[in-house]
Figure 1 (cartoon, one colour):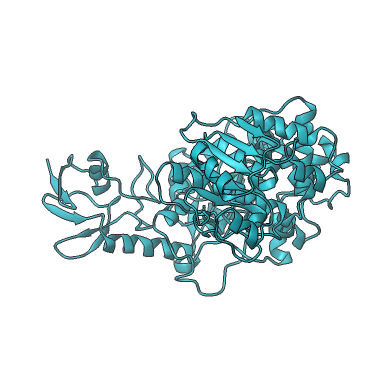
Figure 2 (cartoon, one colour):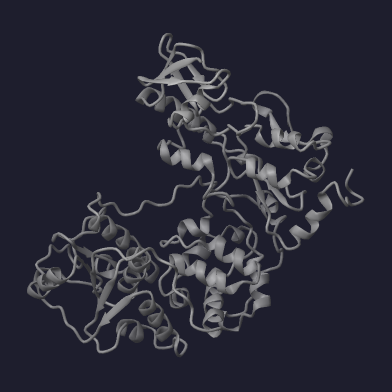
Length: 537
């Protein structure tokens, strides 16, 4: 039985095993990207590189067999640098947004693609639930928001942005009309009660997301009625909407303490004795007000650490317009969402850090020719002028189908993206300053192929061969011009008759994804060997 040494650990391997197999058998996890279990190693990405100690050579762990007595380095700074470089080279030739521009520009990073996907499927309840995962008071916020998401919508290059906010409002209204919405499931209750002073967007948002993290909170407001600032600022809200949102907060475990004025440092100190953390969401604050609380001020706002969101007093946090006097409502909601994370870190003795922006490759502006590629897979109609209140399910489906799907459908499971986070890659290290042209192939009724996201790992080719596809997939061209395609210039539909879903599952990036276009599943039934259409071989 051959043996090897990895970072000083002696490991016994089975005859014929690769370094990767032996390491995993011993509980040592070597990162991989192009490796596909059960198939011959391609060893094309070098993310699994390890270093031979006797000569300093780097070899791929997935494709190198164990040799008796070999000694390797795996978890060292030099090996990590080599793997990082391999990833950065892949990103130098990678095109496609991980996060759609609309979601990226939203301060609260609303999962807009998920909301629109549910609306396309005529499931407004699921769309509403998706919105509430990222937004507190979603039905109110999307009525009064200045809509940066629509400013970032790529569809606007062609005609008008998708009516994102109106669609969220429609989903929430439909949900409320159907009965009381259910709060999201949250983990088991955690130790530590939190006091929130102020019942505006930032305070209620903090309460909402603390509940999602399992922390109980009490919202303290000097008004006899909760959310008095919202009632005064938006008197034209539909009857019952604010009351429904407040009931949802209560059902999530939030307590309201009304007609209670916290005016000075003594009252604030009393709260710190009763609660494990305190959030100040009091609206614009003057230097005098900050001093009255015994806190450092910064002009017309509370002084807070930009990373931890904590004020000058330990365990007291500042959010919303108390910190940004001229902030927009959606920024206040984003602050509430972020401070819930910071408080969770504080209560569990972790380092405090406001959540970073989601990692994303950013394609940048596209021209009209590239927009045509996006429009292949969408509704080409112009934006409906219907107001949110007048929108119906038919119009909602039509409008949501105007989305051009510029997000990556595999962003949450993309191995390349996860490794980029793990290795803290520099996306621009090997950039040339010019990017390739965007192309999208939607010849197949079930599969969408975006060549710019392909890392040429060959996994889909292996899977198609395993399914004994008559044509399958192959690499075409040489050198820098090599690309994935179907032999004899046939269509993707002809290349993937049986292996479409398996090929998508084997793709480690978002190059191959499943389409959710209307009728995709029905049309895909004609792509199998059993019951082929006239267009199939």
